[in-house]
Amino acid sequence: MDQLTQNSPDLSIDAERKIAKSFMGRVEWEMIAIGLGQFSLWIATWALVIIGTIPLYAGFLIALFTACNAYLPSHAGQHGHLSGGKKNLQWLDYWVGQISVIPLAQSHDILKATHLKHHAYTNDSDLDPDFFHGHAKNWWDAAVNVNVGYNDDGPAMKAIEKHQENDPKFEAALEKGGSWVFLFYFAQIILAVLYPIETLLLWWIPKRVATSYLGIVFSYFPHSGLDKGRYKDTRFWTNRMPRFMNHSMQIHTMHHMYPKICHYDEAKAIEALKPFMIERGMPGAEYIPEKLRWNPVTYIKEAYFGGR
Image (cartoon, rainbow, N blue to C red; front, side, top):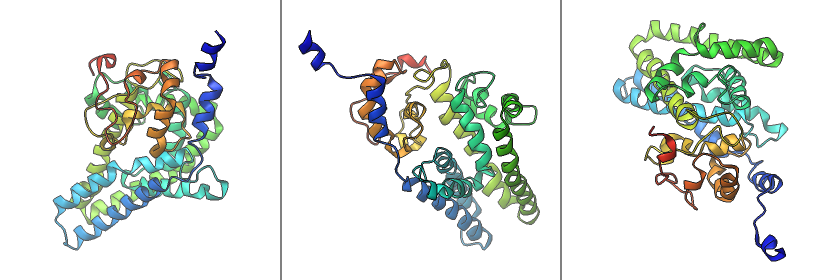
């Protein structure tokens, strides 16, 4: 019995946290580069289209690409990844995060406030702001719901209003972020008057398509149909595409397990924490391969995913 005990792996919570902590605390330079890079490309695209250097259809495709890559750096900033948790670098979390989501006409403060409530109340039908699109009937409904759920009378706003009533800091974040929302609204009106077709194809349509894309890969596929609870509210999933084409959301379960682990370190963390994930009964953990590289979840069996 003593020999068996000595050879048994330590799958305790303390051992899990010790390993997870080893992946935390670095400045995620990759996200800083993506955030500033995609925004610079977006601005350059506007200039090149307006002066006639590139055709509008090419500008639309570039703008669509930048919009689909605009949220992830802000998401990293929301969790302190851009600063690595260092107080003297926290300005990176805010400013890179805010600059990055300009193609989406969004406020980093509002996105952070609502996203942290999503983490605190994942899959709660009353308090999770993402529940309406995260638990849609199918991926198409998720794409539609994420664009209407945050309207004044939308289902997501009901959860937000509850948090406004009970959390003064949450309300303050929404008020602060409202200045950016107003600025973007005003800017789009001015640009629509000066460059109506360009504004439609370089800003309005790309941000809508990107928002739908985010509702599908960030919310619906990782969370739909799952219960509440730290180890059971997010799944591994596959759509048979390389994970980087989905912002690695196939392994989003790692993020909900330990949000302080940087996005680009999640694959390595999963390799180290896989035995703990299986032990905790995380959805799909038993199917992930031993090594996670460019397309780590292509071979995950789909039976547990309910046919989605």
